[in-house]
Image: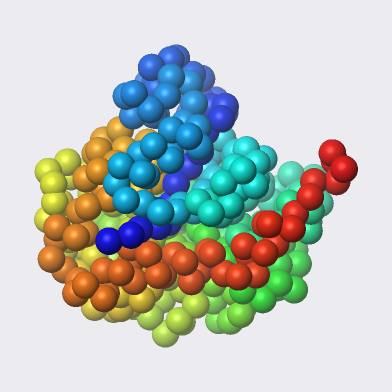
Length: 323
């Protein structure tokens, strides 16, 4: 069955930034944070100091993954321009979201450049305390639905019906955890699509918390969630991940299979579990019918990210910096 990876990161240059400082490449796919934490960022054999489009396509082709959504995150460092270049190079395989620090002096100008010049029709807010904006803006916790700087960006994006807002707000013990904000924004901007990453960070021993978050989302058809990295979050490496299945079963019950997007969060997640296993676990879970599985693995990401308007905007984009 064909698939779209709804949550993939390309890494031309490792440039991570979070509460641990900067992330520095070590080679062989490893990297070290300024506080001394060493991670295997890229799965062995997929790159030494980068995870290129070609490396990603090799993994995708082996797993029958037709297309991928390129997202940004502080773990890898924002790869906005490389993502733009790779969408132009491989338009049949990739679509991309960009990211911006909303507290940068020129944040709104950056947003306008990516939308109007570079043709992006999706933005990723990596606000988690563990890996994103709240890790290096901890002096000023903020909410997506009330902060004035973030509001400027939303007001601008509202001019583009069908724009996609993807949010990673981290786990429940982090100050960045704000499912209520997503529900408020979805009500405020009904013509936008909202994607909550990582199934709202489920904890296997606190599934009532997951249920509470998804019940907030249920009344709003413009909120979907992706299922990426839940193996890492729950701590499972035994295929086909029965604890993850239990969490996804709740999501299927409360949101339905047309509001779930499969994804991997590679390259990092593919260093814990093989890309092949991440690509095949939902099929092996026996949780969905064949038609439902086709929605989760392909059609939902196609509907949310590969809209005709988004594909056309990307195809027509020309960077005036080099015109």
